[in-house]
Length: 250
Image 1 (tube, rainbow, N blue to C red):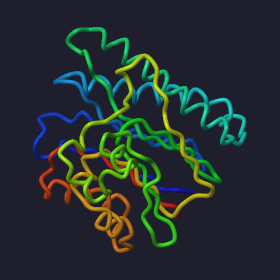
Image 2 (spheres, rainbow, N blue to C red):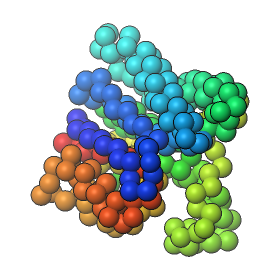
Image 3 (cartoon, helix red, strand yellow):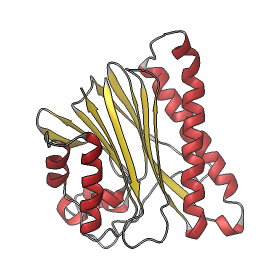
Image 4 (cartoon, rainbow, N blue to C red):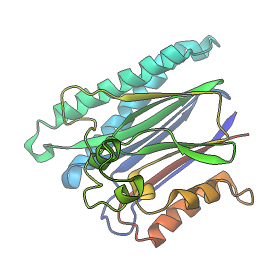
């Protein structure tokens, strides 16, 4: 069983919070977590992230209802199909709304995870991130769909250089800007000690060593760890909205 905690904050410099997050638990051994980071003008980002959150909630909950009521175990294949359906549904809805000139170009990232009894199926579009903590190590599971990640993959810059690159906020994929989207899928065998989902408002403000130390601090609760991460990101300048979901394996 994983205990899940989540919080979102506007940050210091942004007037509104265009991040959204979703935590839905379907019993002791089945849960959905997702973080959405909206973009696209004063209203577009909020509308895109909210629409995506609702699509994921409706698609996943609807897809799992029959299995949950019948006490049937969800397979990894089913979990992957549900996540992909949710992403496609959200993409189509946002793309359609973007036909309104006042919302043109709006979109949202998504990092989501279906936590099963024996593993995790995750989906990513954009540069929000999924990390796991296992065997004393913080490991990034998702790969950013971003220009600087492309440069890293091509060997043109290092990961350390990417962290301060002037174009690090350029993403190469998101929900809603094209009529079709190809999400990235990740699979974890077994449950890690901890899962962390977050928007780039956290990872652009804090280094991974600080994040690791905070989520592994046994002296504070999971809810307090989430609060401390957001507080630290704001102290570091809080240049963007900050959203964190932490799942801990009891």
